[in-house]
Image (cartoon, rainbow, N blue to C red; front, side, top):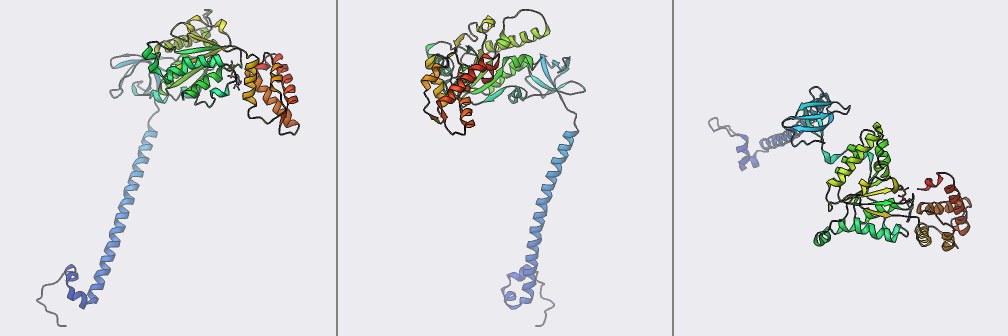
Length: 404
Ligand code: ATP
């Protein structure tokens, strides 16, 4: 083929469109196709490299952000004592108070809030989210109890009262609104140890699907010296956040014992914690989704302020079970045991004065007797031996408490 020098030069894309060339000149077409394949491959590689580079850039940014925040000095956590326009009085954990500025972006600060404070200038630069209450969650037991009404033996009257005062207002608040009465804010369960006070509180939390927040009065004043009042406040904030909730205060007498005014610092601390508890009880509404159950073995030493109307004004006595009560409790605790020829009626007659916790201990001991004897079932004599053992422990000073 003679080359025409004057013919206009074709670029390769035009050549592709030129069917004559495609058919006629495979020597030209093949390299073009190869080049286009290469081109596609390079373009894909380029895209991948760009994606990778974006990913690496993001990783780098994250790492340098983290590095920057690690280099920042830690902030102090302080409590707001009072707020005055753009300034506040804060109290540091060591007790010192300072008058300091509040950064513009920190809004709605109120006294009692926990805030973040710059170490050098002590200015408030942030607010601790109250809903995360990280402090208080370490000190109280929070759970959704599994114990239900059927796990309680006897105590029919007590169960009915607890249902009326706690369960009904939580489940059907509209009923109280319609009738126009205010249900009590809580109840006080009193009676000897191991009679099922905690069990009642857990069962009502279970039946209302409420969060159960358990705190022990004596721990509030002994373990967390200087923190008691704040903890009480935080517990109620936590309860409101987790509502419906039941705050169960065991050994409430440790907080609310009649005050003797000895003026010691320990005494003042208990007073402060107690006053905070009263303030919290007064502060929430009757139909709020938070109920308080107090428990005590010592009603006689309880401060009357605790049981004044509007506070824990419904008192429910949870006494030692009678014969029928003991029978019901024994049935509950033996329901899952492998029994053979055990006469429960006879046994309960021998357990005069036993509490629910002691009856449970008798069942456990009877089970141990069977295990020691290499049996997989429990017989009447195991229970008789167990009653003797638990009864003996009870006589021994303080030992009865072990079964609680
Ligand atoms: P304390 O005053 O010492 O705190 P308490 O009255 O709160 O005691 P609980 O902790 O409720 O007593 O009872 C301890 C255990 O005893 C319960 O976990 C339960 O197994 C058993 N118990 C007590 N009373 C009953 C009952 N009426 N029915 C079934 N079990 C019971």
